[in-house]
Image 1 (cartoon, one colour):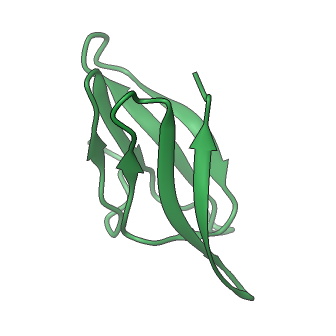
Image 2: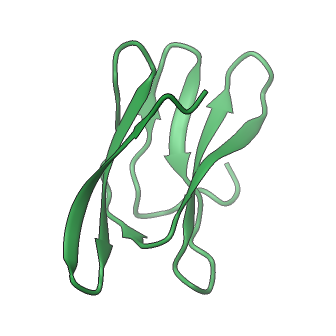
Amino acid sequence: MEGVHSEAQWAVAKDGIYFFRVADKLGHSDLSFYDFSSGQAKKIVTVPHRVDNRIAVSPDGRSILYPEFDSLGADLMLVENFR
């Protein structure tokens, strides 16, 4: 898929695939979802820091977990209730 971040992994869920897009000039990456039924990808959230190469989705598809880095260190981020 065009624009998929080359260093980030993706996570398969029941209805689609969660993935990071290529970072922009400021280092921001969009966490996106590719829907199997529609064949379309949509942005979930823009991550303002560099992302690591891990991503996980909860079994119910309501939470996403990923690490991100800023100039001070690393944080583990949780995105909940995004639908």
